[in-house]
Image (cartoon, rainbow, N blue to C red; front, side, top):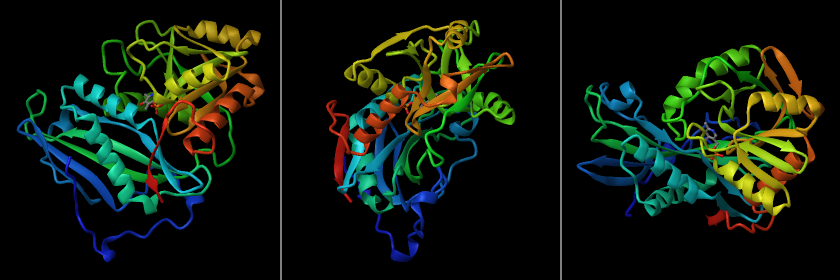
Length: 358
Ligand SMILES: *Cc1c(COP(=O)(O)O)cnc(C)c1O
């Protein structure tokens, strides 16, 4: 794919962040973005241009019917200056699955990868190097046709923006408290819970907001039909540890198939742990926490990589896991994954892709 690169003048460039240890998440964006338009059944105008506002018709489909999909991934700066992506082909494939589900056009995998890689390289001076920091990458597709009828849009914009992000665990690798949501649901089987579309997040805001008001960091979702089976957490998949065995909810159709989840499952086996994907009820979980059969619990996702869970609160009762301490398997999986991502440890899986040098 031919990508045109717009030349930016020195005075158009933004002031860079001063202190990478102060970076938060998703508020700072780089100088450039990738954009490409879809019309008349083809993708055209692939370009890396100045990061700027879009001009869209107020009747554009995306504003009214949420025909929108996105991805979330990161570029890491290795200590030796290599720029690394983690399993980017998985994000590209998932983006196309999301597109197909919402009757949006797919993008050839190699073109989407090229767009991401060329943009990251064009903006490599923005990749932070302080411990635990990275460059968050947000590929997005929106429906842009100006028409209020309910139908798949005939026009789209695909874009990629970049945000340097700080270390997720600034105050140390700390367990979080989850609220088990037994009223609201995130997604039902047959719906769109298994793809990354903004509507899923809109549907989750009320429960998340209420849980935060009560002092919880996130919600643990149950299945939509019976409010009985554990699904996932906010933007993370859920794992329970039984000694040397991991249990994670099977991909039921309403759970997002996380790339970190898949990586944890593979890595666990490599490290000599066993791993099961199956349905697991909240009653079973609570019982197994109470008896001590569940020894650790954690969430998995690109932002946090692994987030230890210290307690679940279900029907006003708190169930504390491992004395609210980070368990050994959680710590080991986290350290190993992060070391692979930053190129500090050998990658026996071929997950890490070097795309250039700082
Ligand atoms: C993105 C996401 C995840 C985690 O997926 P990763 O590929 O591991 O980042 C989990 N749940 C939801 C709802 C998500 O949107």
